Image (cartoon, rainbow, N blue to C red; front, side, top):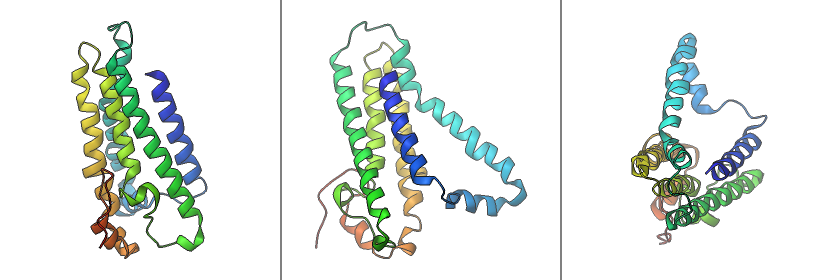
Length: 199
């Protein structure tokens, strides 16, 4: 479990660091800062830092239960299934992040919609992969006596990705910045990869 979480965390760290290095502040935080003015520090303490800390603790229940339990003493078929689901999700988010990085690095693509590779089957293949990673970790935790309690972990992260900080937030105003996105939305699955509905 420690190895899986470390691999996931290191990849995410390098991806976010290389993507954001030298870039201006995230537009979402900038808008929050402008909206709350001098009260931003107080608002962000609770709405960003404390809230994310609580969410992180809940989401991490699955790996905590999985690694703290001494039972079972050996790997089970649930461990194998969990590792497979984790690896599938990890590959999805790694490949889709790399494809998007290559797309954005080409100045000719500015203002265009990425609809190639995994992005041709899901509008958010990186979020789908992230969700699978945590379902895989939950399946591993399920092998422990009280592992089913950890279902809150993948349910919460999937809900957040779909309804709060992921898909909904990103697609809120993206059509204003990229008009082609409306056609993309009609043709490509939002989350779970599927064959595009071409006209």
